[in-house]
Length: 401
Image (cartoon, rainbow, N blue to C red; front, side, top):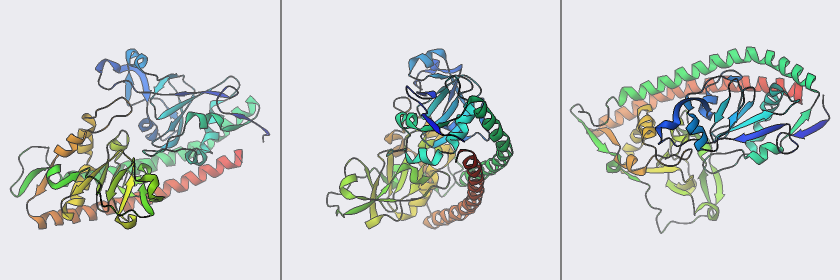
């Protein structure tokens, strides 16, 4: 189909690539304006090819206060972190945050052609992404990506052909996405059934409010007499499944590479992501399977070490509730785009705890059983989506090779 290649961006590229930014969330007059402002969260909710609305909008003052750019309608949008590789075409002029890249085709190049080619290269873009908190695709790497060049008329023809193929796929994707949302809502409802009470309200007999710091150590210090092994487990932020709260994989790294500048934790510690968007997305897990019983990970983890093992799952499930995450989001601090949950908020978070240890164990076992059912449904749902993704990729490979 093609012989010649050109870089996607840069001086000789076929498109202009722009970064995004976030106005200060502490300044009310920067928000609720008429400028669409896209984030990876908006992109993750799409079931089709086009972005036509955003959850939040900014004002002209907010736009001018930061380094975000206005990406014109008809351009390609790409999530460059958390996660890397979600793609769409915007139908509106839109500002973007720092987790996005705007790809504005130059004259003679078709947006749909670029979109579908990039869809065929998502795995390669993910492989080029790096970062300890979350993988991020640098602008420079994206600009150097080579795009096969064909005449404009052929680009349009290919784009229309793939749009037709994608329409049926989009309907199936939408159905699977609706299933995913329903399952996620089911798990949220299970947690809400157990943690019924708003923070600080009167509890039934046999229950009491405990500050988290009363039942767990927050960010405990690494012991001075820590035995240094040659290799240790390392947990990247991306390795936490935000849907199930499980660990997808662990890396093994030389201890000297990670013992300074990373977060230390033990088996059975609860790890809670304090930074946006990982916190809102549900990045929280119980550390398990660590080589020699301890490991290191992102500096954006808050380590919660329960005073007794019976509290481990109880704390884990509480931190995963939608209600707690919303509360934590409302109290973010820090600069735009790098906002974090303050440690003192986590320390002073009130957790409802049954006084009867046996009741605590019974409720925790109940949550294990009910959430495991949700996770089995999620696993089936994920396999369906993976099968559809494989089919879509095979169609793209037929065209682009």
